[in-house]
Image (cartoon, rainbow, N blue to C red; front, top):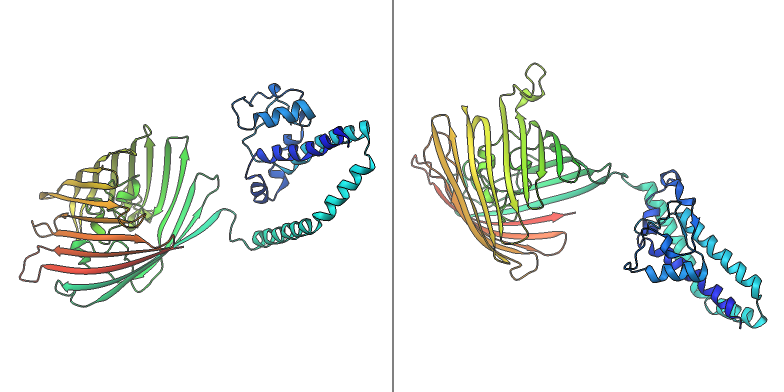
Length: 484
């Protein structure tokens, strides 16, 4: 049996293997790019090389170096780009595959011409064809089915630039000792649909539709539930903004609706913001010193280092921002925020915040004169166990106020991805009083799978309003969150 003939048989699969090694995602990448015009046309203008050392971007330390060296120096069927690069980290196009295959077929044709094929070799090839005929037919059927499915998906796809993401939250709230007006078991629900579009792969245009009904836990004083908003399931545009990176460390955001307070910052530091059921697991000063969320605004985020981030944002709230005879710089409710954060992968996360609002914002309305907020945030991570909290000092027309929360928790408690936590603290004052409400919550967030998370919680609150009404309440809440 001819040695040269068997070398020619070996050369072809080896070359194809090296071509596929250019990119493990080459086939998927090509399937996702239906237009030939999208390809780099110089990919077909390849140049034959005689030594792997001629490829300037291939190093002896590369994992495929020996395979490339063998294909170039033993078989001469690897080609490079005109600039003597191999570009082994990018996706493979049909043009490049055809060029590489043609080069190896030329080698095979030369080897066959030199040595010929004897009858024994032909008989062996025929036996191999017969032996694997069923497998080849099955493989051909699978490829045909995949091509048909890809064609169907392309014809029926929602958008080439937009992804639809949804979240639905269901709450069952039972008061054990309810504040006046909250004495019975109730439900509260919220549904969100996020349309996230990207035009470059790094930017994001988000339009969020939201509807809901119900709330509890004294929303006007204690903040209510974090994931319950809306009235009679009326659909509103809750978020409408565009975010785009400029270079590797700066991100710009332009908002038509929905961004204010902590929406402009990279992180609120405290780990119970998100898993908690009550709204003021999020530090309350972001809302009490923030602007109306139906305003327009702009923000910037700058990564000064890999760990230090500076965020700033401006919101013009109220209808004046959308009225030509008023405008965004004369709107009745304007605010801005600046936050400097230290975000590590280790023990310490911290942040300092300054906020200003042209009105004294709180849970029961606003007063002229403006609110200035100075706050600090801290999280100490001991490896699964954390201690965190914040403090905020606010000045406004006729007074000042100090609010705070502190808490601790365990990550991955019992179930991977879960969080068991308890936090509490003094909330900002309510209009007409000099007293601060008190809120304490214990919660246990448990992910059942990638789609469903269940969070039971127990919440205690004291409105501290006075006036002879029942000021304290005790609630049990069960929240189910579906993400899809």
